[in-house]
Amino acid sequence: MLELKRTLDAKGHGVLEMPSGTGKTVSLLALIMAYQRAYPLEVTKLIYCSRTVPEIEKVIEELRKLLSFYEKQEGEKLPFLGLALSSRKNLCIHPEVTPLRFGKDVDGKCHSLTASCVRAQYQRDSSLHCRFYEEFDVHGRQVPLPTGIYNLDDLKAVGRRQGWCPYFLARYSILHANVVVYSYHYLLDPKIADLVSKELARKAVVVFDEAHNIDNVCIDSMSVNLTRRTLDRCQANLETLQKTVLRIKETDEQRLREEYRRLVEGLREASAARETDAHLANPVLPDEVLKEAVPGSIRTAEHFLGFLRRLLEYVKWRLRVQHVVQESPPAFLSGLAQRVCIQRKPLRFCAERLRSLLYTLEISDLTDFSPLTLLANFATLVSTYAKGLAQPWGNGRNHERPHS
Image (cartoon, rainbow, N blue to C red; front, side):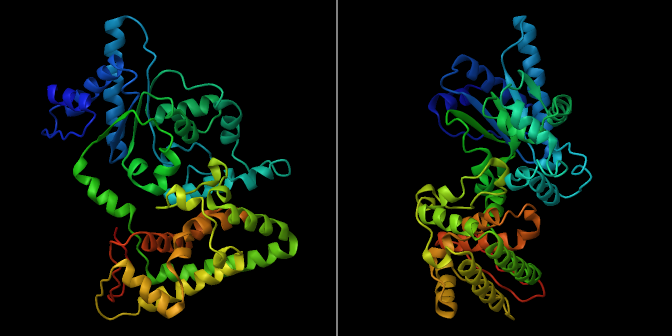
């Protein structure tokens, strides 16, 4: 405990190794919570990252016991808020969404009920929206979550009682909580962290439980696996988008012109959508890139779809191999430029440009376009990092996998 205290004083890094069942979780919580109370201006928040939902629940229960002990000793209720955050799959209470088994399907259905374009149609068809999100949006932001410790079931109980969405309630409440317990991915995966953890206080203590798993989590978050089946579905996605763009040009061309204007001003302006429209953030782009104007070759919807089609054909060609090949991102980009004349700069904008297009076309169910999103993420990753590898191999399950 003394060494941990010195680590906190030094504002540095520390590694704690203890056998299972010896109480390291409660020891960490007790010390950091006491430090937080003694130096509230130095440590404003504890962010506790764990791997699985059962482990998250275990940490919350330890925290509940610790707070109960404090309150018993001091004889009064403390102004302390601790909560768990997990995916929509574990927090959603909407009757149309809860029967779905897979997280990707839950996320897609949630987006189809809460996207801004869907909510705009609420006056015409009230069955389209999510009443839990609407209630939270109107009332939940005005009333802070009462102090206490909340596990996932507690949050769902509050949601049912108040008629609020537990997932967005938890995402909003972590900004004010003293202790937040959630998965590694909410802090390490840039696609998720930029949406969930970006606004968290810098004066926070971060704990990674089972930290030997961090390497795998980081590798997974910056890796893309593309199979031939995925690429075939990308082709179908492109055809669907092409038809949608042609239809919009005939009925509401001004919408596409407005998107073009925003893209000239920069991606940050183009993606300034509501929280419900942000399915996944850009995997890697820093703020200075997002402020740039999008390259002219991918500004219009038709040009961007043609750009993606050329990229798709090149990746398909690369997967027609009969032996293992490894190459660096610069080598991959060189081959791409020579064969289909695609340069590095527009590739960096692919993920954010696709997100902008889906928003402009008012695509509510993004699950159907996850293959094309994967290809766009791959393009952004491989054009941003000079270190890594692209590895196609021909064993019946061909992949193009960049590791960064």
